Length: 168
Image 1 (cartoon, rainbow, N blue to C red):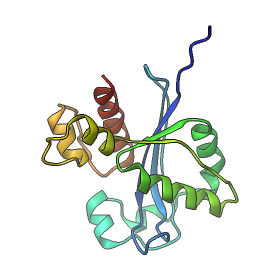
Image 2: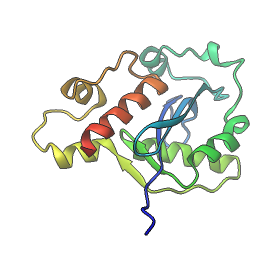
Image 3: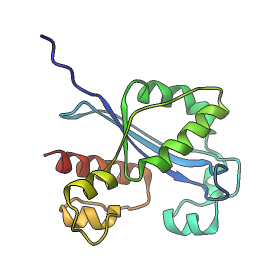
Image 4: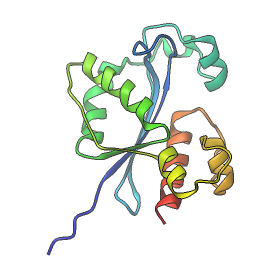
């Protein structure tokens, strides 16, 4: 009998802010996890072709001007799709990242859907008594290093570590 195992794509996006469903990706990180170890990592800044909200610039440290010379999402869409296709998408508040990612892929004429796992929901199921469930608090609670919060790769790495601790 062949034992099945899941492949996961841990994702984190930083976005431009703005109106609901008009947000654009400004930074994306994807970590491919086979259930035991990371097998691939992808991270890049993206030119959203829109102004990044001041609040987002302050939160992430990513300035609109520093994105002008970066490639747009459509340049990366096929690579992103190749990484995440047929994998379970994991994120901290994954519904947000999933919605934005689907919108961006749709704008590139790529249909995408996936099973998702939200580390907030997972933490709430397992640890019903915690005061907060934001990434910063959970990383502190579980002793997970989070040095550069609100940057995609740092947050994706922290989300993966959180997922591993919650699955134990």
